[in-house]
Image 1 (spheres, rainbow, N blue to C red):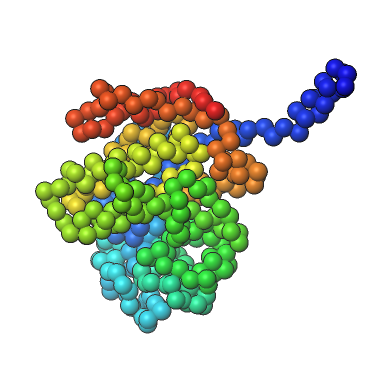
Image 2 (tube, rainbow, N blue to C red):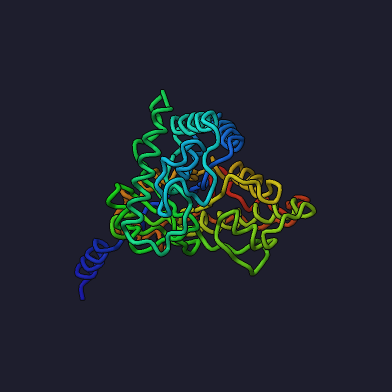
Length: 358
């Protein structure tokens, strides 16, 4: 075979070579469920403002239960699957409490955070037919319409695009109903930490991850209540607050490092408006956000922003991401001498510009 033919054959093969995908950002989606306590609305508002002083670093998703926008005296306006005025959680308190909650939610929406749906009465819907889901979403739409009347800035969404089922309990009838009501994504499922989202029947599925506790073989979902159960069987233990806080912080950092230096699958972290273990998980989450949000190529975003990014990607690109077929950052070597008193090793987090590897 002549050199000319060999050269032509090599050129032909090169023309069919699949190029590596561009490295995707490392998305981090932090969301809160239920969203009742006014002091937590203020605390998170203040924290987000602190984080975003030096740039657009962090945006949250709030999966709000509709009862939070219904005053106690108006509870019978809600037609639940079990009858009027019935809910598994408390209603919104006084009219003043509801007004203040609406004001917090509207202000956060203006700042780029997302108000999404956690249904209304916090029921377990795993056995519900589609019509029961429809009734609950119609009720949520009514609640949101009334809440918008209390928002003179017109900042609350006319309808949510994201959903998380209470108790993560869903039935086959849920998904057709979500599409019918114009939702773009659902976060009620579970998956592996390094799995990229999939679009199924027109809806992005953003799944909570099954995480191993730091330096442990035990695992649970990436949500504060699940850690509360796994670490202490849901028993408050003030003597171990600091241990719980540090272990969850390190668990989140383990999750981040594995994905940031791996296939860049988005991180999914869920919390509640409740101070489990004296606020240990809340403080762990804040410390985590301070450490990673704002790092090179990290995007701490709402779920709707993640859905927008996913919509722009081809199936081929997503498949490449899942396989990690892009130039990746090389994880810094562990340096035991640099570990701080808590055992945390800051050198294992990325610098502003990490080294590339394949």
